[in-house]
Image (cartoon, rainbow, N blue to C red; front, side, top):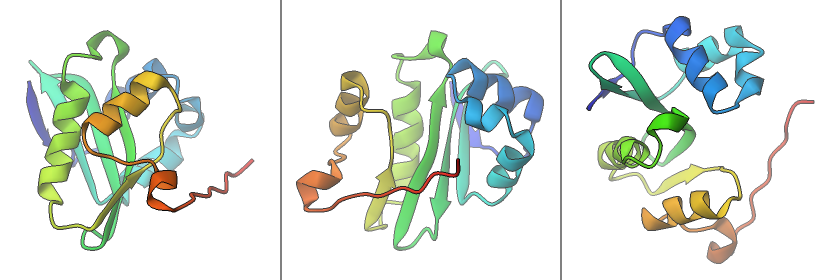
Length: 135
C-alpha cells in the first residue's frame, strides 16, 4: 500500500468510494464535493497497485486546528489498517497542532478505533460540540 497526497481530483475515482460507504449527501452534490476537495488543507489517498483503497481529507489552518473532515475506506478493505495508516500520516504531518478534531458515527467499533489512536470524546474534556446541518 502506498499513501500519497491527493492533489488532482478525479470524480470517477472519488464518487464510487463515497457511494460505497453510504455517504450519499456527498454523492448527490458532486460539484460541492469537488469544491470541498479544492479548499481542503490536506487530502491523502491510499493505493494498492493503482487502485484507490481509501482517503482522508482535512480542513483547518494547519497551525492551531485541523479537522478531519473525511476518512473513508472501501468496505471490502476495512479492518486491514488502511484507515489507521491514513490517520497516522495526518497526525504525523500535523504533530505540532494543538487541536485535531473530527465528528464520526456513534458506533462501538468506530469509537474504539478513534480511542485506540488517543482521541478523546469532547464530553470527557469538559466540552460540548454543536453542528448546524443544512436541510
